[in-house]
Image (cartoon, rainbow, N blue to C red; front, top):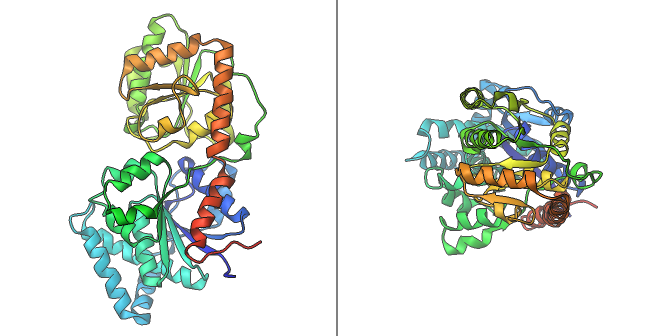
Length: 408
């Protein structure tokens, strides 16, 4: 039986918004799969979660290794197999032709791939897996070409399907041993772009959560007028719509509070809009939080609100439902696979302020019995489809198909 050895290729890792990757790696290791972490760079902000801090010490960073290491690895690749090295450069050039970034950027990816290929040989890695079908998948593909091994990747949503042609998603899928989608919707969106013969390569493996959420002590939904939105403060998350909905509730006499748990480029714009709407006293922006802090905010709130314009299937939805808190979310992408309108929460049209405000008002008016039923339904849904260890077993099956077998 082969010694399992998989290399994860990541862009920024660890990162506050990517705890699902850490959970997946930990679950694979618990299943007997040895995982090497290869990241292009580290996150450029402080890591509030001790588990992420520990994960950073286990990760090898490409750019931090320096230019000479990159050039040396590339020289070594040419020395070992000039034809393979030239094929890899030609592949990168084709990926850059009419791509999302200039061709020279894709040549830089070859240098990054060369260093990862060197680590692959040194650590006896037999397969590479990337998260996100954009540049991490390309670097994994190039490193696999240089190393003569297989690769795969997980696609998460709009990052891949909105720019499927410019990031050459069909070519990546064609060359991959297998591809993971995090939702049925995500799988269908990738199927749009590829030949029928490649459909069978795409498998659904949900992002999962661990015992810290799944086995958390049950608490009833609190009788408080507080909502929490967890995530990066960026345009696609719909926070500006959310504060407008909050303003409508305040105007109707609801003295409710909104906690924005996260940070990001839209923070100043959100603060400005809160001032314009007169809801600044009702809004708290926390900045980046640890997993434990996010869990506490979810427990202390009446519901999670995610008014996104575009999504994959956010992990925080799983976390909220596991804790027995309903979810108010936009009816987009894979979200309806977990948020069932009237059963585990409320679904609203993306960008519709009135519908969002009405859903939040309905949540505030909901009877304890209705909220308790939603809490139970949400917990069942998450346990059935989003247990990190159960989902990791699906990935183990796929890894076995490329010759990696977990140890006992």
